[in-house]
Every structure is written in structure tokens, then in C-alpha cells.
Image 1: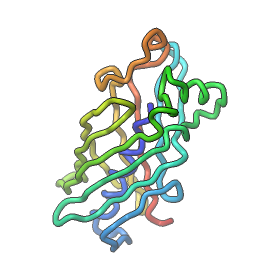
Image 2: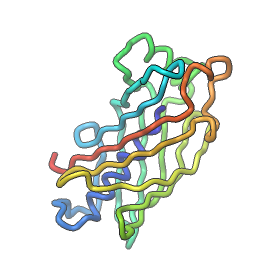
Image 3: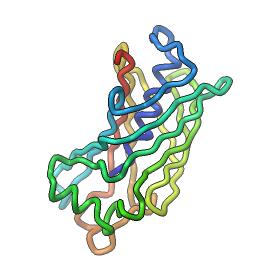
Image 4: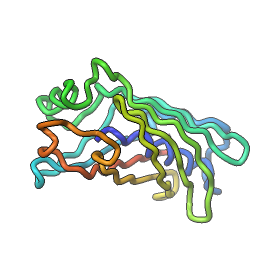
Length: 179
């Protein structure tokens, strides 16, 4: 559920690589001011749960023909607009923010004929998951990426509570270069 920041980083990369964009810099700082990391999953198999991470940082740095991407999300910044749910998600049964205060992503991006291909590693709790996804330009000044994950495939399970939360997590990263 907390894998949204990698997508935002990838979106930022697309903005830099698309002609017509206003960004000329060799490095882009990703922050809550210009980037959104959101997620969606289900609860009890039917109820959609949407949320975001409100505290994170990252950079996109050009390295020759590719881009180096790094980012970190404060796992305690999870926000589903339900205080009780958020506190439960911060507990040791789920994100265990006391022992794992950050969710990190490290990767590289390469421009392709249809966008930007991102490859990297997500570090979530004690897990390491390889991810790949593509960014597209949603409209001028906006970049977006959507990543569908099976949390069980990457090992993000919750013991006896696992049946309550859907396996598929949709993470969306949006970067607004006009800010």
C-alpha cells in the first residue's frame, strides 16, 4: 500500500525527458509541493481504500543517457483520511513505523519510444522488491505513472490480518512541473 513514491519519481523523470517540457535542470527535487504519491486497495474484498503519503523526498539526476532515481517516504505519513485506520496501519502488524520509519526506492530510468522505463528496487520494511514501470505525460506540465503490485508477491503480508486487505495495490505517482 505504501509503494506510491517510486511512481512519482518516475513521473518526474518523464517530465525531464519529454521535449516541450520547461525543465532544463540536470537534477529535480521531488517533494510534496510538486509530487503526489497515492494508492488504492480493497478492504474486506469490497470496500475501496484510497490513501497517500504526505512526507517524502527524492531526486532525479541525469547520468549520461539515463537517470538515477532515489526517494524516501516517511512511512508514518500514511494518510487514508481515517485516523483509526492510519494508526492501525502504522502499527507493528502492518508498516511497523517504529522499526521501519522509511520506505525507499533506488533505480534508473531510460527513455524509450513510448515514454520512460523505470527499473529499481523498493525497500519496504525488511523486504526488497524489484520493480519496473513506465511514466507518461498526462498533459502539458503533468507526468503520471501507475503501478499495479501484488503485495503478496513482494512478501508484504500481515499474518492473521492478511485476508482483510486486498492483494492488489495500485500506486499512482503524479508530478506537476509547473510548480
